[in-house]
Amino acid sequence: MNVSTLIGKPVLSPAGETLGYLTAAYLSKDLKRIASLAAADADEEEFFLPFRAVRAANDAVIASRTRAEHPSGIPCPIGKPAYTHTGEYLGIVCDFFPQDDTPARLAIALEKEVRHCDIACIALNETVIVYPDAESKRAGGRRPARRCAPEGAILPGTKSDAMSEERPTPTAMSAPLPDHTVSAATGMFRIDRVNLIGRRVKRSVFDETGAPVALAGERITPETIATARRKNRLLTLTVNTLTNVY
Image (cartoon, rainbow, N blue to C red; front, side, top):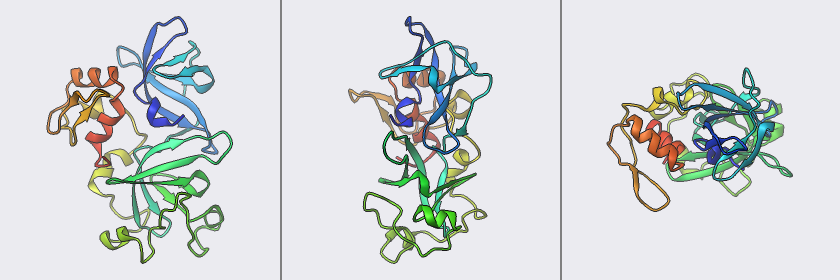
């Protein structure tokens, strides 16, 4: 299960009653699993679910009526900007993959390229800092750079990395963020009317049949949000509006 497939899904009781829809996820302190979920009801009132309350998560999330007064865990970093430990910009975190038998991973997207990094190589704050390996993270990045991506991606910051030639090297924590990351970097990635209504869609969103949910340049209305939620495209609509990931 990855977080991006959960966000925007309807939440149902075991009896089939609609309780709301998911808006955000919180991770355990070790960043290895989902600890709790945030959701909104039909009146856009927020409520929280401990993840143990979730019984199934296929076309909809089936959850008991167990509620938490406050969310437990750390806000999932989807939507936050990511940098290498030496300050090169990597892109926007676009997904989180908890794993049962292997280390959890983050997916980081820059334009059409997506790279994956083990969670053990990640330091999470206002930005996501990616170290070449877990040992370098523990040493504060003082070890010589090695590969951090398990899928053969070239470590940013090397001479062979084309991105390092295209972007100036900012300082990881103090440089201004690229324009398309500012809204996502100010806090937890959220899906709600405040973030979306009135904004223009940057890239068209389509449902599974190819029918348009929202076309590039359109302003988002409450009806747009309702359609995207119904067709499980709320996360895509949000990312295609607030960032340039896709």
